[in-house]
Image 1: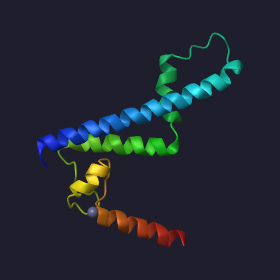
Image 2 (image 1 turned 180 degrees about the vertical axis):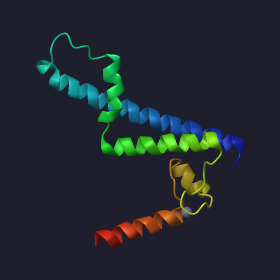
Image 3 (image 1 turned 30 degrees about the vertical axis):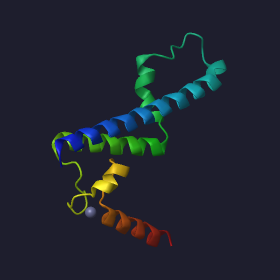
Image 4 (image 1 turned 120 degrees about the horizontal axis):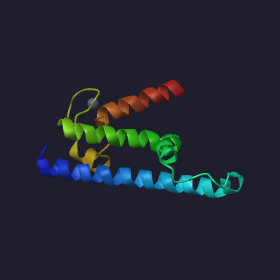
Length: 121
Ligand SMILES: [Zn+2]
């Protein structure tokens, strides 16, 4: 993969990560507003400890997504980006364009979905 492509994917991934974190922050701030009557006055909402715990409060889906993004970013660092974790084949550029955080090539992804469907049935 070309260096310029990697750079572009990295940027996209970082922007996505920013989005998830921003959304999570807003959710928590909403929670805090709702709860604020029950909180002691002296509680420091912006305390470091509180901010550290905030990633644990991400909703399940966001957390999974965030993990995938982190993994993809790590792969860019390690020079392994764009390779399917299942079959080691390159993931198509078209698929990466749409979902740079994808870990599986389209064929493995379809296999996985079929397996999940079979399981559900
Ligand atoms: Zn594959």
